[in-house]
Image (cartoon, rainbow, N blue to C red; front, top):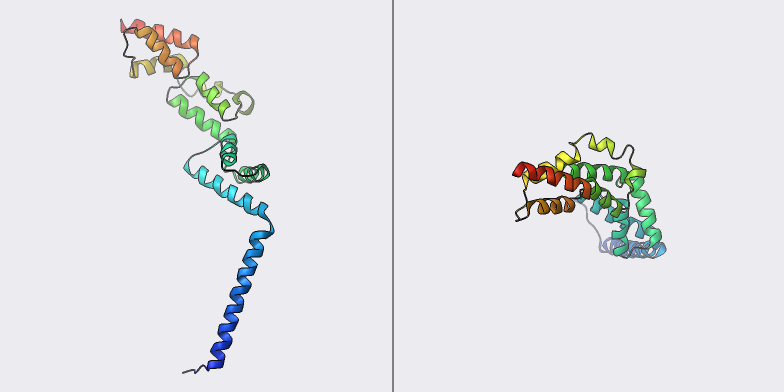
Length: 188
């Protein structure tokens, strides 16, 4: 058994209090020294949280960080770090978006406009666009007709409703009119 004297306890208590004060001052010095790395780390953590939910484009993440009032330098450095880590990749994002929209029988014109809203120019950034993707899926015309067969319009003027449905789904007007006419012939 070890006995501890009153003087030893007081000494340990004073030493522990001094170390706590030192840690507090170190922490406050760290917090006030450089705000920029802290800002970059917070923005990067925000990007990590956003990308955990679903893949996002660089433009979408940048707009979100601007909305959350991060500085432009902070946003730029955090986005560059996310690009280096592979969290953000516009080519990967575009590839997944195109495949999912084509699988959902959306039109190519609508897909291209959605990509451009995300700051991606598919003709420039994606090799062999759109041929590489259209070869994997049925033709746009067949896809449009299949969409109308699966969910036919419920209207008095079926031809006009079919055309409108296809245009809303992102098909070009010429393709929509051709597919709507062909579908309408099978309905008679």
